[in-house]
Amino acid sequence: MKQVDYIIVGQGLAGSCLVQSLWHEKQSVVVIASSERKASSTVAAGLYNPITGKKMLLTWNAAVLFPYLDLFYRSAERELDTTILYPKAIVRPFTDIQAQNDFWAKSTPEIAAFAEPEQNIEKYDPYIWFPYGGLITKHSGYVDVQAFLGAIKQKLVEKDQYIEETFDHAALQFSTNSVAYKGIQAKKIIFAEGFHNTRNPIFNWVPVKGMKGDVLTLDIEAYALKEVVNKHFFIIPLPNGKFRMGSSYIREFEDDAPTEGGLKEITEGAHTILKKPFVVIEQKAGIRPVVPDHRPIIGEHPEQPLALIFNGLGTKGVSIAPYASKTLTNFLLLNQEIDQSMSVNRFNYLYFKQKNN
Ligand SMILES: Cc1cc2nc3c(=O)[nH]c(=O)nc-3n(C[C@H](O)[C@H](O)[C@H](O)COP(=O)(O)OP(=O)(O)OC[C@H]3O[C@@H](n4cnc5c(N)ncnc54)[C@H](O)[C@@H]3O)c2cc1C
Figure 1 (cartoon, helix red, strand yellow):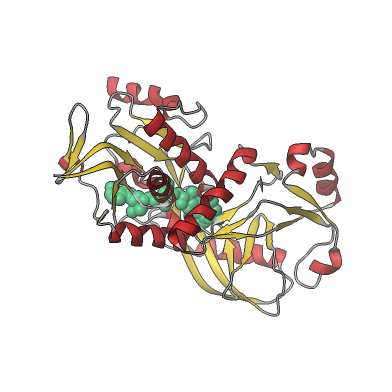
Figure 2 (cartoon, rainbow, N blue to C red):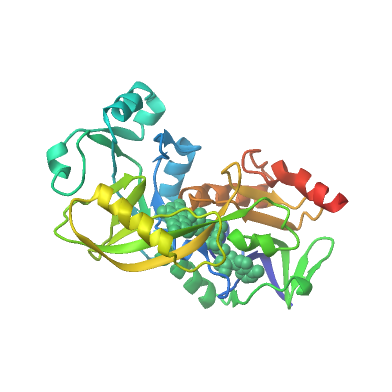
């Protein structure tokens, strides 16, 4: 029997950040990841943005998440010998004078730590619609998620810690102090399956739902802005001279294939931002694992503490996964309590409701 500390099911952002965090603490893992169950992470644009939403509010726990993600991905870059983190300012044009006044009237020192006014209209005017100025963010940018996931997978394969298959629940056995799966014995098993958690018989009571989204790659003619632009949609300049633009939000869907509606919505959005002609050269789609309260879900099963979950990264996996991984690692190794806002405990009533029905 092969012995490891932890079995992790799933190698999206949740699984990969957890692997990195556990390796950091000298723990051994085996990762089981399915090529048939598409990872939302392989589609993610990778943006991390402290000021989000229509109302331009500071994102949840920004003061903790953003400094930590910087440390985390920088350390991963060194350990994996790959460029992962691309810090970039994000320019958010105001839609009108009212929006401009409202934002600065409500500004707090916490917001000021992440954003400042951008009034240099001449700089942006040749490329984007920017008549009312905007704000420009600090501690923002994007992560090359494909590069990060690829480097983690490569290292897992080199260490003989990667199994490419769809997890077979019938082959999982729990003993008093260990779990066993097809010749592998571990202290615990962690499910980081994203939206596919809905098919997990142990954790299907957790309220993870799917929110499908499309993302495009564009060529933009004679465009020189280096910042990310974000006005409902985002446009990220990539190192290869192309641009990533997204994204759509689709609640009702049948599969994870790119949609006509998403293409239309995003290209129409592009016309409201860009003054330059563009062509769409690629479209991808995926399914985000969203939770009603928009917080991650980590922790133990209420009646089987050897089974844990790491899910609920929603629309912000890049910024949430590093800190959530650290929190889960501290729980596993040091038994440090998981804050209620992230703990699976907040949904345990759903488990007992399902069990008693
Ligand atoms: C269009 C789009 C754009 C996005 N843009 C951004 C962005 O700019 N910034 C941002 O922060 N977030 C973005 N996101 C959200 C981001 O993708 C998610 O927050 C994050 O990727 C979720 O990661 P995860 O690891 O929980 O799930 P996933 O990435 O879905 O990974 C799940 C993993 O589990 C595996 N798996 C599932 N079930 C099984 C099984 N039974 N057996 C074996 N393996 C299994 C899958 O194969 C996969 O490896 C975007 C999402 C979409 C769709």
